[in-house]
Length: 398
Ligand SMILES: Cc1ncc(COP(=O)(O)O)c(C=O)c1O
Image 1 (cartoon, protein in one colour):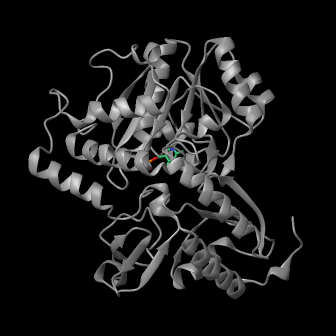
Image 2 (cartoon, protein in one colour; image 1 turned 90 degrees about the horizontal axis):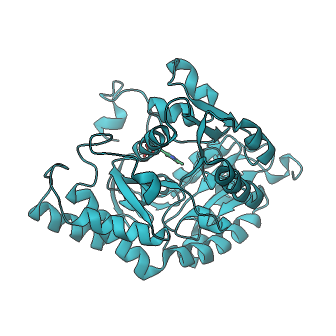
Image 3 (cartoon, protein in one colour; image 1 turned 45 degrees about the horizontal axis):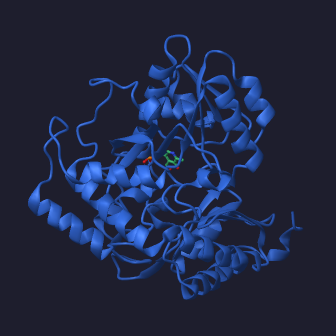
């Protein structure tokens, strides 16, 4: 153990649990800890390292950019950012503009400010879903439909309303004239890997169009190939007004983006929104390399194929009651009697990284270049962890 994990007093604020392991190196789907132990990573830093750890093309792009130009501020133009924005616009079907941020929460903050400026005074409410996750800034925390996370920070900025996930009637009932936008994830990631239904997403788009409300989709976790399409909403055949993303865009380098249809984007005038680092050359050069590799490897197709195999393999484990998700964003709901946190801890000890997205479900979000051999290896370790923690016979199938 290192001083960072072993000492009784950590120099870090206690916002995160005490880390069970300290990593020092990564390559592809593998991580190594301070003691040299190897791990198979089926979480990808929470759906971030979609191309695997230390991807050589991303590393080269970063090194080259670091030697060339790191930062100038947004008072001046730089080259990689606009190129990345054009690629994102193309992958989203075109006709929009991009604002770069440093994180997912900031991408959503941009969307929320767009909605407020677009709606105008008195029409500022954003409707999101119970169980959603949109970030930890004060506004995105209120958009997040998890009241237990709100309590300590009240009063939160006003103008947020929540409806039951996948309940189109409830959504319709919430849309009064004060509503500027609806904000939804295609798959609720942090909420437990709960995919939207076709009826809900299509209906939400229709209601927003009928009432002149913005349909904003949070693709921070689902974006850039993870679900088997470039963006999760593309499974439902809808075109949003605003799309936010982050995580996979930099493959570990902090960068996020808020895309909006031209007509919506144009409500922002110079001075309305800004961030010192947004779209700066280092992060943008990483994103440019990431998108080039992703397009060359056709990561959505790979996620579809590997995701199907992973879901099939998980479903054969006797302790798994249900497999849900899209592409390579998957949850395995465990049969009653199993504690997902204990299973994840046991898997980690055996060299597999997954996480307990709820007390009863494991989340798997491996890299998108996943191989059959890696699926086999993960299933073998997971089966051993499930055996160790609790027998499959403890409860009936749900
Ligand atoms: C759907 C969604 N939106 C927003 C966020 C917040 O992103 P960040 O942690 O980069 O601020 C997350 C993070 O998990 C997320 O999953």
